[in-house]
Image (cartoon, rainbow, N blue to C red; front, top):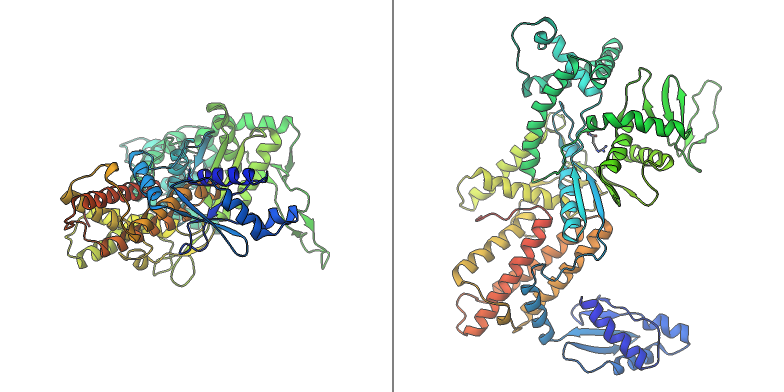
Length: 586
Ligand code: ARG
């Protein structure tokens, strides 16, 4: 890596000048002045009681003769480093030959399970579920690219109250007569589910008896009683088919299509481990585990006798079993961690990409698993909580009538808006193309933000073909492909440095390459989005200033083509991590 090369030269120079201290470099804060800089002379000089500028000069003067870098000591006490054209050309050639484009793999890869997606069976997917497959899929691709072994699990919500509610509602609507009274079987359809769940969910909030009955149905499903369990499996099948379609349109790919229900066989075992360690207690008939740590659940003074006790920093106990023995969301998540650790040995990390509103839930689950030893000490349990997609009014994105938006509607909207855009550019209607561009726009518009921040879901902005948008990057890649189709290819050796525009491109590729590691450490794709945009924009400058196709000088032309090939590779590599497809044309 380039940083290592420069640091080696600097440290050798330091040693030659009589210093054992380590000198490190960063990208330059003033890219117009130099490419890299070393800021360490201040601290080292202070420690040694020396003049910082003199130290910078001494070290710079001791740097061994080389054709790749220019070192210069500048006041107050920086060492500025520039790459020579020779070096820039070597980098271009090397990255073009390397199938990884100069991005190294980790020497100690980890085994990771990623839990993202999280769609709920029998409920329509809605906008609150959208960020999970976007962010999760890209993080997964990033981790794999850097060498980790990653298993992606969709972890469907398929074992909770919504199952009992849906079944009960279907029963009341007379849709399940075949199972209870015999006669002709009526096929369960998606429309029935889309209709049943919202109806039942609204009713449970106002009708206590109905809610109890739904609890009862849920328990019958969870204990695999017939015909409840068979009906459940049918509902699951219809619903999962639809969920698969949506995830595939979004480009999210899972290795495991497990759900909460798959952890059922581990629930008793997990509860036994917890009980054996005396971590649980019974509270109002429910089985709970206290998970608060010091500093949490501090009782606040009551203002009157009959006021309920309130707490500062409250962390409620995790509930494992309800009054009726039914299990809850925390129970299935704890059992799932047990299952994952039994199925896949030596998992280094389990990561969850889930809405920030579930922060407490994951704190509870992780604490229980650590206390009970269900997750070994050395295993990292990571919660990546994402913020909300807001409408232009700054409030959670809703339909005009104020309902939450279904994922299906979002996809239709993406296709419609992207089609309009394409039409205005003279491209005829093509649903797949519009979907590729619409989804690309939405993903980039999402991933460029910090994961934990809310952001404004502004499709018109995301869909512009200029600026920091998905379509701009797709368009840049499409354009390069079409130029290369005209010019044919060149080889890596053809690449030389002739002008400032090319220098800028290689430098932005260096930054792009180092952004992968930053993304890995920050668990955010934002640095990669920005660096990819910067490369595309450096390319646009190059392409508007230089006439590649009509270049008369054959060797210059070959060099330009080689550069184009490199930019194409780097763009496609980055877009692939962002799970944004490059269309054939646009
Ligand atoms: N089904 C959940 C929901 O809709 C999300 C699942 C997230 N993953 C997990 N292991 N809890 O809220």
